[in-house]
Length: 94
Length: 108
Image 1: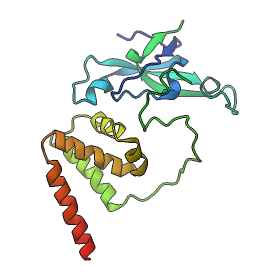
Image 2: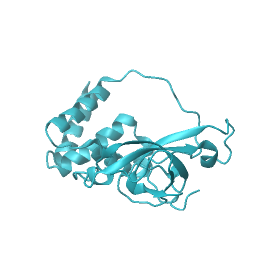
Image 3: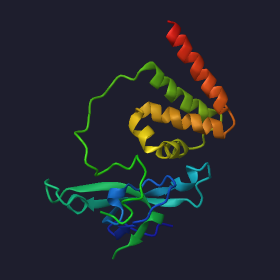
């Protein structure tokens, strides 16, 4: 069952694990909005270690503002970046 | 800057200062296609269960190695580690095969 829905405000957790985790540093600690609920997939941290990916996690496409990501962003202030993030890396920011 | 900024691996480059991105397509060399083929073979044989395993190996390369190796060389380095972990080849077998190839090339 997906914890977040389209339009929900979320915070991408600012934490580190040496395991393969698919969250690049430039989005850690950033706020965004759920653009879509993709589906549930195996956890990369487990799959990377040869595991079965359980418990599967819902993957979301999160929309971030480019101006939030880059302090010197010179493009259109309405520009966004969308990135897919697993539920166990997200917190509610409502 | 995030608080985990200092805790990263060499692949996590997004946002760091860098030159322009080379967007040119390039023809794959034959050896690069062979790396692709070997990855498929590792899946078919069950040595590799998920591509995340190979990505993990790439992320764990020493920063100097990561810098120095090309895209397919990184996949190859990661696959070599995986095959050793799985007991398919030993480090010694790999090294002697590399030495043999180097000698053959030198003899040309």
